[in-house]
Length: 300
Image (cartoon, rainbow, N blue to C red; front, side, top):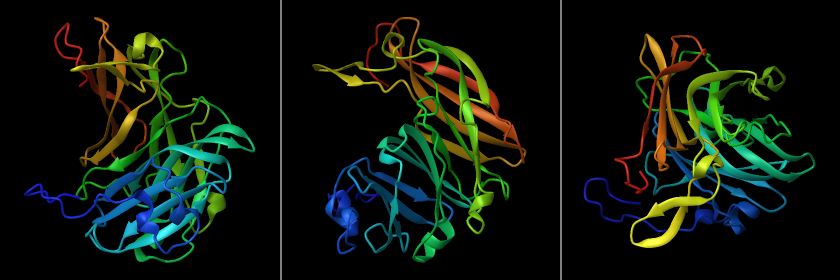
């Protein structure tokens, strides 16, 4: 951790599982990585997660008790029954913390697993806060992102479900859609919770793009300076985060992903999606691709 004003180190580096020292179980003993650290702008708290990648599979979550990241944390361990919870991505919403992971090796094989967590209870450290998950045993809906509020002054309309975006690589090498999903959660009556959009039922049209690495979206195809080693583009998915802001007369979601440009470079495609207030019918408001001048192969 660094002092924002001076850049001085004020704590760490520390192992990811150190937050769970004394907690017991795999959250304390395992240090498997894929850590997410997120600032809850509404509550002025820190959220940190680290998943356990061997059975029993867990999502380990810690929420700071104050705005001070060097202080104490409320700690939780949530079971993941559908397998190894890979590539976790989180978002803060008014009614919950939302996550998505790609589940491997569970009873249903590979699948897409969005989950919601009872933020109100976790901020108070109440034990047994509820986790509500949905699961689709398909690669179609992999690696989606939950929206993450960008401003405490601009939260979503009351009662609006959380939007996820993702699933950009289902028609390689090119595509002209991004798929949207909605998670309505009811922690008091879990059976009333719904997740809609699995299987590509709510596409959003976007300007056509070619996946990075020549259309595959996979592989280490991004050059670096002063080395022959190239970077992995992970161009088969949207890149973290999916930022959200409410402007009063409209709502906006911003996100990027890697593409192959007309000159063969790997560039960044960016989007601003908008929807009217009190609506989740999002569409592209503006978009573009940035890759630097022709011949510039530096990753941006």
